[in-house]
Image (cartoon, rainbow, N blue to C red; front, side, top):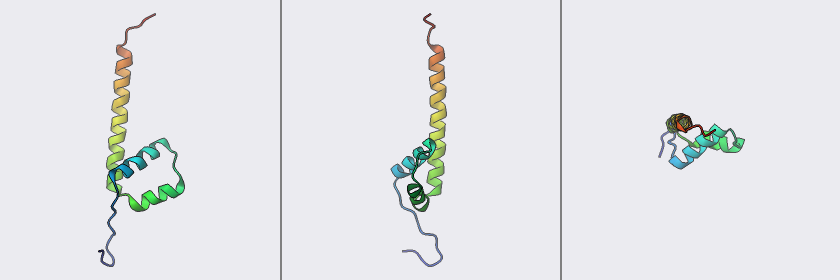
Length: 75
């Protein structure tokens, strides 16, 4: 129960947060769904998931480049 003047707590699942962050990376999202995310998601969770996803993306690209460069040239 919240008291007058207090900030309401936001209870959402991590899966919904991850989904919202991944959709924002792609850039395809309905306006109504993004408004629901703004109202329901915890901003600290969104920031944490976004930083983690960006780090995983960069590390994946680095691994892919290292793998491609290590392949022998078969010409």
